[in-house]
Length: 86
Length: 86
Image (tube, rainbow over all chains, first blue to last red):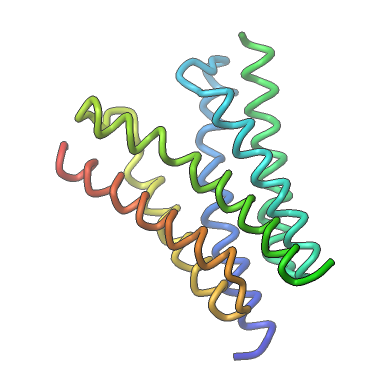
């Protein structure tokens, strides 16, 4: 397999796992409510995602860098809403 | 940075992002209820996680392999409960 083919698999994986946060962001934004969302869980995840981003930079994986950059942005939005709507 | 130091960052990231699924598994198991959980979202995520696992094998990243193997197991448990408790 070529490096490009491997990155295509990584990018499809990135789309699938990252977009799974979108319904949550949309739900909070639409209903202006963050009830039932655990702040500590998202802070936990955000820390993990930032570390994955650093890991992606260190091993030079474009898929990991892009996936975790977008995931971090979405999670920061969820955390921002959670704190704002509290 | 050595390769081992880089993998340590990856493994810490793996612990943080993977363990964020544990409260969900515990909650379903404790209350024997999967209400409010989106089956399609988890099927989406499971597909993504399996692709990340394959990507990890292809680029030879231990952190990605371990993180996504465990995440896939946890997500399969959630999907199993969701279908069983329906």
